[in-house]
Each structure stands twice: as structure tokens, then as C-alpha cells.
View (cartoon, one colour):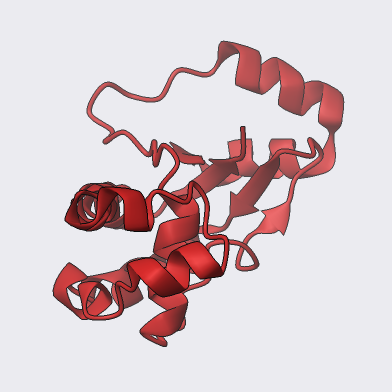
Length: 150
């Protein structure tokens, strides 16, 4: 999973018209000053921790499906709201809900939690910082985000 910052106008294009969205995505290069929104395979583990901590942050149902199946659009309002929640949720709160046994039993992808122990927790902490940074950056710029699965 990854996120990239886009303007409201570009987000609108990707939401309505698959052909124009494909064209936009083929040519779009995020500004060099934007943080990476790449979450590697951490997304399911982060989802587990965000839900266990009852943060109200939902990485899967907040945005709106775009004209291209594997993309979801987040409006500037969605981004700002989520950035605010993320800012109020330091990773130590999520880490308190890290449960390698429960995560493996629940089939939380990529099922490294028991095998890798605290390495898995460190991995999630690293990518949680990426998630917070990309949302806070987009919120400061009053931008939307495109979320990509794949």
C-alpha cells in the first residue's frame, strides 16, 4: 500500500474518468519534497493496531474508490481529519496492542509476528512514522491523497 499527495483537481480526475486517470497516473511525479507514502507490507499490521487501539482511523473505508480499481481517493478533508487523529496517536499507544500470537492467529498479513517477534513491532513503528508523515504533509498543503494497493 502507498499514498501520494495530489491536488483537489487531480483527485477529481482520478475519481471520475478511468482513461484520464490512467493518463494522469502514467505522467504524474510527486514533488521531490513530498515524503514517501510507501507502507510496504505493513498495512495489515497497522490496521490491526489502529483498530485494537480504537483510534477511529480506518485506512480502508475512509477514502472513495477511484475510476481505477486499485486506487482510493482521499479528499483534503479526509486527509486533515485523519492527520489530526494520527497526530494524537503516538506509536507507543499502538505498540501496547502488539500481540504476535493474536496477529498470527488472526492471519494478519504478512504473518511474521511470531516468527520475527519485536522485529515485527519495529517494522510497524517505522511504517507508522511514514504514514503519519505523509498525512501531516498532505494536510499542511491542503491536498488530497491517492491510496494505491499493489
